[in-house]
Length: 114
Image (cartoon, rainbow, N blue to C red):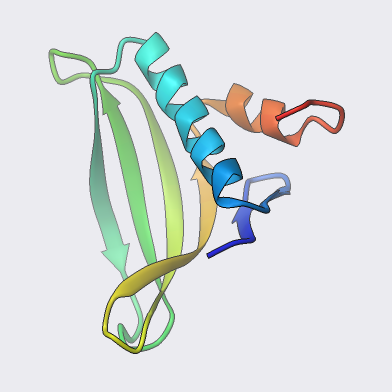
C-alpha cells in the first residue's frame, strides 16, 4: 500500500512509491550483507489485539552470519490489518531500533537523490 509511512525513532519516512520501499529494503539488506550476514530471521515477540481489526506485531529481525551469530538486529512494530479476503497486510511499520542507522540517515537526508 503506497504511500507507506514508516515511523522511525526520530522522524517519519514517507515512501511514496513501491520503488521507494524496494530501495529502502535493498539498502538494509546490503548493509546487513556488508557486515557479514548471510540470512535474516524474524522473531515474533508479541501479537496483541483483535486479529479481525488492526493489531500490532512486535518483532526482531536478526541478521545472522554463517555461524548463526547476529551481526545486527532491528526491532520493529508492524501495525497490521486484514483484508476482506482474510489476508493480512502491514499497514504501518514502526522502527523501534534499526541495526543500520546509517540507512535511515541517508534516506532522511533532504538533499539526497534516492
